[in-house]
Amino acid sequence: MPTQRIVFAIDIGGTKMRGAVVSKSGDILARDDIPTQAAMGEAAGMKRLAALLRKMSADLPDTEPVGIGMAIAGTVDTESGLFSSPPNLPSWHETAPSLDIGEHLGLPSWVHNDASLAALGEYVFGIGAGTKSLVMVTLGTGVGGGLVLDGHLYGGYRGYAGEIGHLVVDRSGPQCACGGRGCLEMMASGTAMARIARERLTAGETSLVTELVRGDVDKIRAETLVKAEGEADPLAGDVLRGAADYMGVGVATLRSLLDPELIVIGGGVSRNLHIFFPRLVASAKAHATNVDKALCPVVPTVLGDDAGLLGAAALAWEKLEG
Image (cartoon, rainbow, N blue to C red; front, side, top):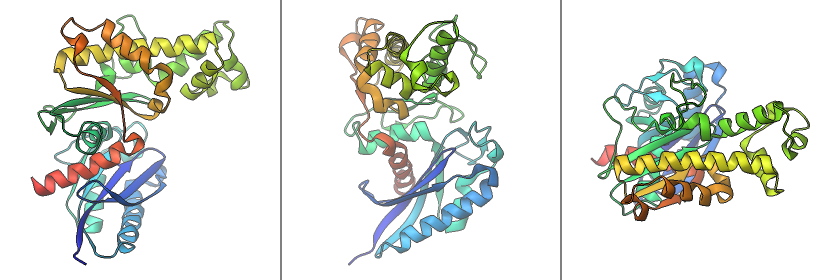
C-alpha cells in the first residue's frame, strides 16, 4: 500500500488541547485530546502534545506526517508565531507554541487565530465549499470571526483582521476590555447574556433562571438561559432575543462592508442556534440595505466543533502545496 501523506491539526484552548491526523481530502483519520494544564507552561504543554501526536501517527501505518497546522485562541503573529496576551493562557504570553511543536516533531508548522481557521475550515471542507468568499462569526464565551475573501484567508495588515466581536453595535453599551464601548462581544456573547441576566435578577426581576442556578447568579451561563427559555421563561427569552438582535446588527454590518457570498454562524453557543437563529436572521434582514436584503445567506456551521481543527489542517495543506 502506498504511503499516505497526512498533516497534524491542532486546536489549543484554555482547558484542553486537541490533536488530529488529517488527510488531504479533510478526513480525520485519528483524534485525541489532553488537558492544557496551562499553569505548567507552554514548553511543557508542547512536549506533552508532541508525544500525543507521535503516538497517533505510530498507530496509523502507511502514513507520513508532512506538516502541522495550529489553531489557537488569542492574538498570534502569523509570521513569527509569537503568541501575545492570551486571555485564557496568560503564562504563555510571548511564546511560540507552533514553532516549538514543529521542533519537537521535525516538521514545518503554521499557526493562526482559531476563529479565522474555523472560517477556513468551513470554506475548504464545510458549508462554504465551492464559494468564493465567506465570513464566519463564532459565538461562544466571546465573539470572534474569520474572513475568507477571494479564496484566501484574510488576516489584514498585522494578521489581526476578523475581530468581529469588537464591532460597536450600541454606543451606550458597557465598557469592553478592548477599550471600546458597546462592542458586539459585550452585547451578544455567551458571557454577555449571562451578565445581562445576572444584572436584571440582581435588580429584582424574577425568573426560573434563579431556581436553575439554586440562587447563585454567578453560575448563570448561556446554556442556563436556553434551558429556562425552553420552559417559556420571559426573562430568559428576552435576553436571548436581545442577543440575537445585536448579532443581526453585526451581521448586517459585515454584509454591507464585505459583500461576502455566505455568512456562517458557529462557536460554542451556536449549538443552541435553533433557539434564536430565526431572530438573528430577521434582525440582519431588518438592518440590511435594500440591496443586501436578498443577498448573502446566513447559515449555521456544518462542521461544528471541528471547524477550527479542519481549518488548521487546511492551513497546513495550503502552505505545503502553495
